[in-house]
Image 1 (cartoon, rainbow, N blue to C red):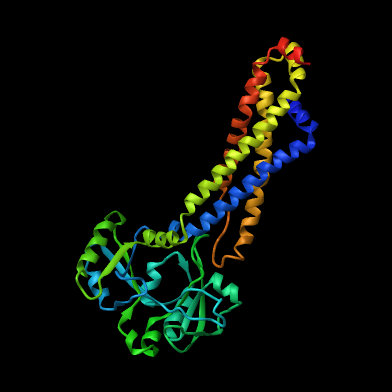
Image 2: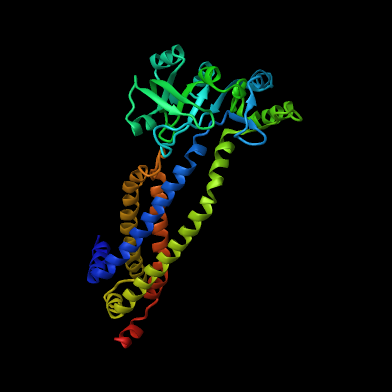
Length: 379
């Protein structure tokens, strides 16, 4: 407790310098927290992807369809437990800027494939009864103020016409990072009312495997089954499929590491300079402390304690500020769950303490090795 009182007293002498150093840590950790939150929002689809699900698309591109007849053949592959399919609709609601994923699904097989998407039995029963029924994710419903019973018109883009849907349900995610932006409607409604060239086709297949460890073998078996056909397939795990979209954005990991390295080095320079100046200014006082019985180890602890206190206080302010600000960023990134996980907050504090310890190590060692005679000679 006596050492803590001395540390606080020393930091209180140069209040502006102390405040600026704390502010440097706070700004650095605030930036770190926002980068981590942004990284998490970009990768949330990858992190929640099902380990037992595969995605089968046209080998040419996701924009190219596959025959509906492939479903029966995929079900025959050893290791396949269940199969469903979906088709991207790509319509417009009111304005082109109102983007959200609209997907035509196969109701009997869709719900068992995605148990993390929670919808009540009553709402699902209503979805099965009404050919024009739709179910919207919680995020999309909140965005547009939809409620059950609303009539929702969506204008098709590459599938022409204005399509009317009855909102019979709103689903939510079982986990915080689950995607609740989707809009589901029945594929048989699309099949009956869509253009002739789209009949008998689907966008992609979702395959559930009985054993995730055998997924590579199932992937190979599916693609081999349709090799050299007019509709060759490309199969990959759901995690790999989601990661491919993240890669289109760029190397987020490299960006975060680069910025983090610059911030870390800056902290070292700022804090190291602050502590070096503080030790040089108090050379005489340190000599007096040693004269009255303060050992080298205690002097080391006092100087290093100042650096660690600056790091801890500033780092805590910054990371807590980032945790408070991150959810507000979700307003500008529709459907993203932007937050700073508690584990990453602890990592940020640990990095700040590590930077403080490194920056304070040399000044603290200099103070510990200070000889009383040499110090008093400088005074």
